[in-house]
Image (cartoon, rainbow, N blue to C red; front, side, top):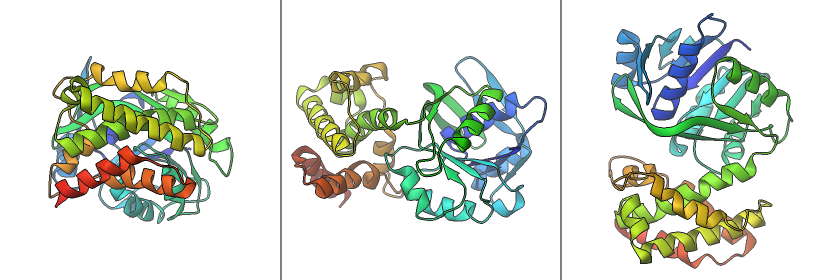
Length: 309
């Protein structure tokens, strides 16, 4: 496995793309970036700049392009797009995939491999989640503002461990902070528990993370949504520890008071798509499938619909 493609060079893709290129000192891997617009133009002209917590680096990919047909046939694809762009991205990648290509999706969600499989039956798809706080500060520039840059991933749910073991070796060789767990479902749901509950309440109310956490009523709403998510996870065979709701509820304290969730930032921009489908509609679909009552999620679904009008 020599050819790596970072598909989507936003905060997450830009961070890991820059780290991989920086650590590919022996040029053992060919690393391509798929980007677009002014961001792509800047990367092509001046390289990709990562302003990290401890250092600032400028790296130059082997190739940066919008046209996936221009890159070498990828062995490993880091899929770093928002959920609303996933289907189109997978269809694009499918044009250059082989039976051996591995997709490592670094986006929020609890059913991402299943969604990817709608648009391709090739290769391996690894369930994963990622912890990193980054954003595009300006074209060609990624800024890290938190998170430890850790990827947690596991085996292809159909094809087994081979691709995950190979991917773990590549990530470690490139000094990427990662944990390979054969079944990472609990870790994926644990991250989702926090971002879905707080993302929903912040988007519906227009409040920051700090404002929600310090408002007793809104905080109780977040806790109620988390409780409903835990019940839905149980229906899917994922069991949380007893204290996980309180741990996830208190994670908001580790963020700046004025921080907004990514769902909220997208929701507040009428020109952008947002991830309501990922964080609300998906949960309502699971609730309907298993006949579980989720009154708080339903309440906030209505609030979000009203705000969107």
